[in-house]
Image (cartoon, rainbow, N blue to C red; front, top):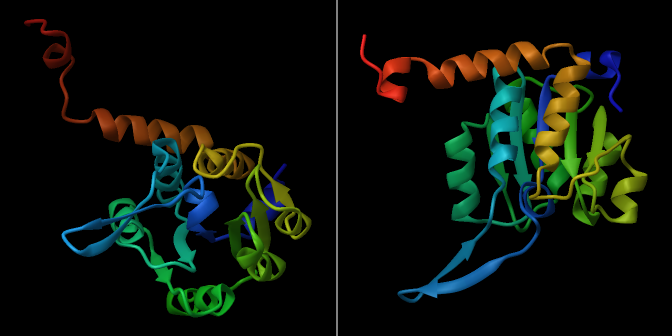
Length: 193
């Protein structure tokens, strides 16, 4: 799926939101006269993003919508860059984020799913599409995932990518150790010494 040589050239992972980080569904509503938008995110995708960052990769999110939900998720995952712009094309917004990080399109993998992502997919070093991507996004992608957007596709990519780099097991073990740090076994089991 992903060759070690291709993975070694990538330093940035770019993500679309609707249809990649989410299933593409939108819940629009009104709270006290203000419009609100809710999105559902996959927790395993979030862990995949954390693992990518722990492996030293930069993660950016580029979307053509503006949503407080996305801002909160990006903040929660501590991503390196976020572009929400409903008026601007996504490719220039990605280029701007990359310039701020001192990175290039060639060193970027991008996960997309639909027509707004095709221009990006045609220019990045590793174009990736989710399992339910449109035919146009599939045609522009070198890596095609099996999982659908919002249903573990980002996690599928993270594991395949980090395995291609030969660091999956190491990153996972460090993650597990960090998540269990400062917790004594007797506290968990109730055992006394």
